[in-house]
Length: 393
Image (tube, rainbow, N blue to C red; front, side, top):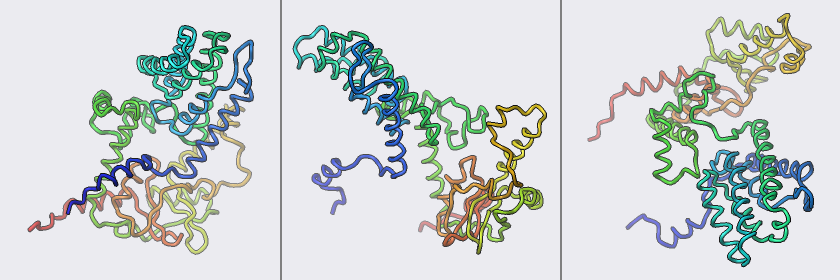
């Protein structure tokens, strides 16, 4: 009996959601950003009614632009060039068609179709552009009054304000906008790409893959490299076999409390040669991890404060000097990835492949029972690779 889904089931599946579930936090982040962008647009730049002199007013397509730049900032369709140039090109087409075609139906058809062509030729495809061209085609009286001024205001100006707000909002909320560039420097500030993206594929080859599968409008080259790298790491993790975090973790832990002075923390790092120290509370409750980089950054900040040339601007950047001595709880990382003893060793690979995470704490009911460092994982995978293959007979 064939396990292939029936035709009816395939049709029903095709009508279902095509995107993965969106976490509530991410949906709220995008929604709040769109509200902020449109609020700024309406309160300070444009308005709900038409300004007869400058032509500044809100138009419905700005809502669609807000969805793209705040909710899907990695999409090529949402990038600043696509948004501003795409909307402006569509507005130009809409105005030209509106002033030259009297029939309303033909006017709408031509405006939208020609706008898509114009955006494609300008390499600025932006879905709200079609709505902008249609808006112009359906508003002949206003367009005759505004003329090509409609392109500059409200379209180009309003889109630019939304894009600028999206750039600032993305940085404030830990997202990347505009699109990551393939040749951008690594997180370490060197010419080497991040380890997960050293694929042996050039930007040209990745671009050809996108073009071959007609995905150039859906995915950028940098994000394709990130996805391929993540898939390779996940596939490599499958080769770890049945190993779990409990099998390879270090169990004899040296820990510190949140009140431990920073000098004592530094001495433990020097004495044991660790790269990380767990911070625990009462009865071994896990609170966070201190990595060596935290000590380095704190030492840098203190050195800058003690420098005779320390300026007011640098004081504002680093913040006021702490009134009390710095303790472990002040610099620990509370957002580090975590695992359980049953977590497959392969699942630890993507956690430890990022530059900021050198160790993953292993928890049991909120208490730390072990820690897996990069050294632990490399040693376990090396041993696994030396094991003989099982007899296939």
